[in-house]
Length: 217
Ligand code: PRT
Ligand code: MG
Image (cartoon, rainbow, N blue to C red; front, side, top):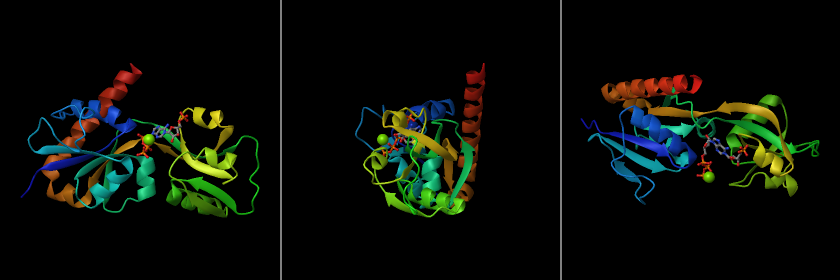
């Protein structure tokens, strides 16, 4: 049986916070990730490999078993859906919030609220739960521009400090979900490679706990 483990990591801001946790759990890339254009990396462990991919692609790789384990933001996981995935651990990094936001002081104009977002599934679910009629428009970036240009009444986006919203004359409105980065595991791999994955989850859990203790000390 092939007992190699493939870990799918989200590139971008999550990666910088993931690598120290992985190192603390005993997994170190064999070469500097950022110095390379490669996407598939060896590690210090002969049977563990890393792929570094778009955050939004991580759930797909893990769900379909191309990777056994992944690291992804809860926002990405909420948008993708949890089918075929276990989410055994909150890595407690890259904290932020999924929120609705709009032009400061403005009331929604249209009877059917127009919402611009890259999180279309999250937005559809949220407004339906609130009993608000919404037309959800998919955008791929610069959501903050949409209400200013009257493309939308509101946006659904990630908010951390709120500085990006404020800089664009907007305000956060409703909290949809608090977000942090999660470990996900392919459901079949969890069974087939249990003896490899269980210790990895436990070591990461310990690394997260150590980090939490250091932060509160
Ligand atoms: O670039 P690509 O489209 O592939 O993805 P991305 O830009 O979403 O990736 P990246 O590297 O930014 O990382 C995204 C992941 O980090 C998300 O899935 C979240 O889980 C997490 N995260 C944590 C954040 C933030 N904090 C964050 N502040 N992702 C994005 N932001 C952006 C937000 O979109 C907004 O533009 O920062 C801005 C808001 O920040 P404040 O501080 O101005 O409120
Ligand atoms: Mg980005």
